[in-house]
Length: 187
Image 1 (cartoon, helix red, strand yellow):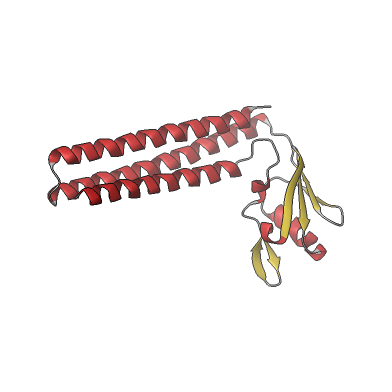
Image 2: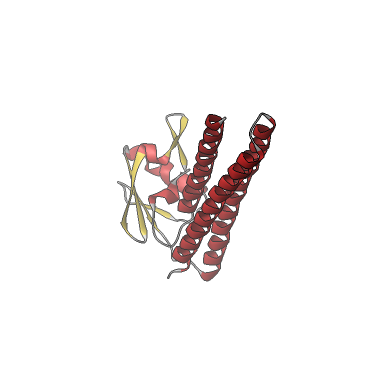
């Protein structure tokens, strides 16, 4: 029975780690006023008849805090990259210098900053919901294990351990969202 308990704990910890990883990726996509190559993640371009991620056909760099520099591997992709960035509706106005696409990141307005903070908080709430869902599954499994022979004290210990893991992850989520809010609101 102890093997089942440790397997359950490992499984729940893994699921909670996945929720945290998802939160980290989601927060990276929310821009904080500085240029970041992840801002262009999720943009696809037409490349020889198929949709390909922008990162697979170009190098994306940040020469300074307000500029993204997209250097395609093939020069004939420059127009397609420009169009894809425009259609992605990220609020960017790409420029083409003949060799690469340059994107100047406009400074954030106060309203946009507040909107981005709301987005960051919403991502944090989604992560908390995912963590709580993992907790519910763990608690249900603990009750099932009690029916299969786990003592009541062991079940309560298991539930306390699950709750401790949940509390730790909720605290981490709050800290990451607060950190992101600080980045967004910093001028």
